[in-house]
Image (tube, rainbow, N blue to C red; front, side, top):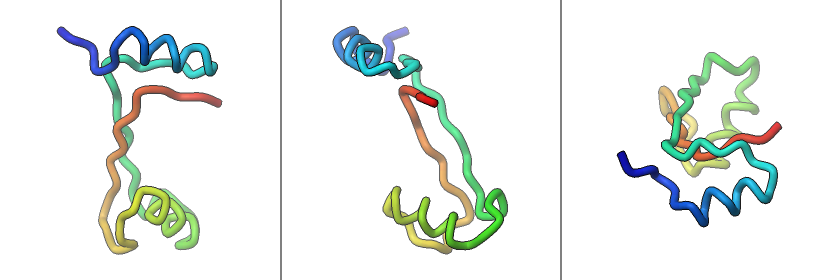
Length: 65
């Protein structure tokens, strides 16, 4: 199976201290996961979606804490 990221992309992310997920993964977010509307609206703004969506699915190739 071909990885989503190529070796150069993986190496570049690792150099920036990301934990790389070369085959990708996703997380589902729902409005009810957040205590206040402001948080949901900020996430919607960040990903360019309207506030009334029922969920947001985010595909990612790296994580950092």
